[in-house]
Image (cartoon, rainbow over all chains, first blue to last red; front, side):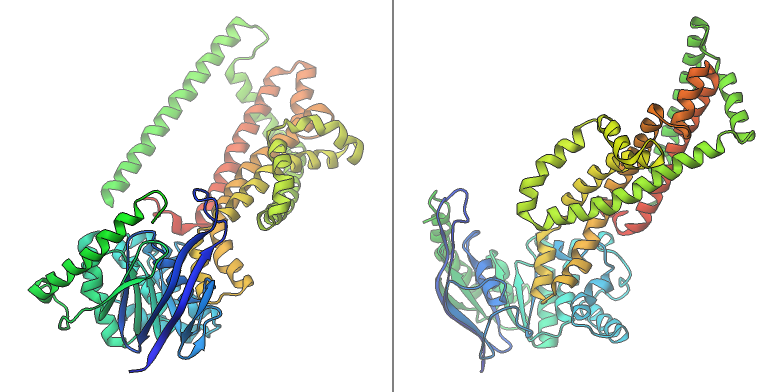
Length: 266
Length: 259
């Protein structure tokens, strides 16, 4: 299978940014990984480990200090047209209706109004928000706003979805159900997904592979393939194998999370 | 939802009743004062004086002059205030230099500049307009500045991740998120404008509601003076309600955002 995203020896040092550290902060240290077309890969790590920074670098929002990111063979220098980002639910624009939110990206691209309405309607339907087109985000639940954030990215018809803890603000049950929804959307659209999370359960529920990150400066500690059958259901996720995977990830993470809790972050 | 609406309605009703009783109390207090101090007219005389002022058309030209000064000053304050606020919002250097000055400008009683304004703009309407604008410009500047600074970072990141141009980012992210704070600043500013033109008229003028108050005071026609004050009060309430209505219309999406 073809490699759609290649991250090559990427590191990131923030100069002089931390009030509490005084000097420069090494957020990401020499990271290498690939994501193949159609794959669902999660970056899992303790909070503050630099995984969101790594995603920003892949998204072209942050330049790496060294190394490079290739998307479909091209070096990333800014947001790549083949990628779209999904943030937390509070990222939807409160002054736009659901449909207008979905239209945002294609509106920026200058798509003509009628075509963009139609495209937005299709995507709104795909994420299960048909009938809510004219509601404002304040009138929708957290889970629905998150569908909206996904729809806004999907409207651009990207090959790659980069998701930054998109379900982080949701309660556990909604989170699980949104995970199932995301898998359904993923299977329908065959996108490639790079997903950042700090939830082990979520990473196992969704991914083909989980890249477990270390504490700062983050490197990939271990790559764990999730060899569970799809579609993932509550049955497949509670088997002996699933539990073993979870225990294995926990063993790596508890060491790393403890490092993150010491004052100097090491 | 309907339970909520009901509660809100009942709250409204409660507030209205309280306001009514407060008004009644003020009325009684007024009656009391007018008995103790003989130069103080009883409320019914004030009301009939107000009626005369309106029906006789005596107040019309003064009302028009004050409104003209206030609204012209307001317009100038909005245009200047929003531009200055935007400039300070985009330039850290300018903000560092001018923000302390603007903050003290906000706090200072602007009426002390009136003699200066009269020297520059003359004793006519222009110095009143200038005074009104001076009163309103600071809240508009500060709210524009706050508005531009408090645009949610994640909204900007969304725009950036979709390769929005600077113009698009301003028009589609900054502008809509700035409408509520800028409008709040304008509402405060309009009140201040009214204050500015009235104060200036009290000092040196030949027309306007402020002039009229001073004029009736000098003639010893206290009932008429109080009638003008009452009318000013009502006018302010109307202006505020009007601004609030426009504000609500412009940011419909916020109606349910907080609940």
